[in-house]
Image 1: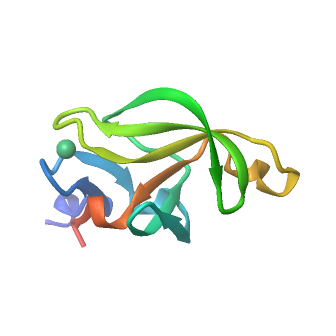
Image 2 (image 1 turned 135 degrees about the vertical axis):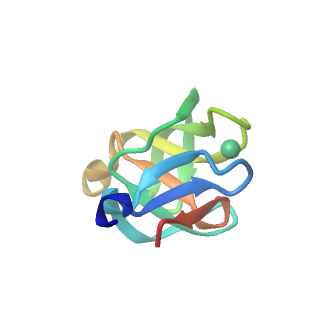
Length: 106
Ligand SMILES: [Zn+2]
């Protein structure tokens, strides 16, 4: 029954909507609003809120909140633009808070 073993996923902790793949994690060493957060290359089944400039620990960024498309909880944010050269790698990437997602298929 090996074909039933799917990719390792993360789901929304409220509604179990699948929001990201373990393989898309770039870094686990990020800080969210409420503790640890992960940086992802891709997420799915989400929608993106209004862009705004936010002063983060690593400098000024343009970010947009990321919401679960089912239950509309805020799960994290997307980096739209980084102003510091050293932070440019985060552009177009997503932060999901560890406390807002749960492991699926592990
Ligand atoms: Zn949800």
